[in-house]
Image (tube, rainbow, N blue to C red; front, side, top):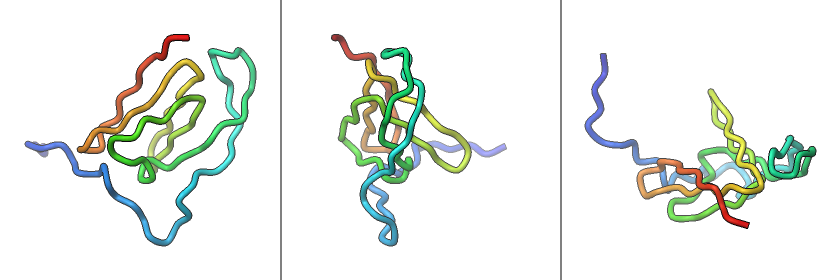
Length: 88
């Protein structure tokens, strides 16, 4: 059992050997009801305090997170992700 008393600090991690942008990706967007072109970003590339509008695909070593066209993703100062539905 491992007990962690603080959130991991991942919000400002930027690798120096990789390009800064994401790559192109196609995914099914529930809002549009069709396949759409979107950006694909590594979780390590997300910047603290920045909001990312959907559609967007975020991935890391063990998972992926689809952000649809009516959603946005925000990263807090600890690197924690929150997803919110946006109003049209």
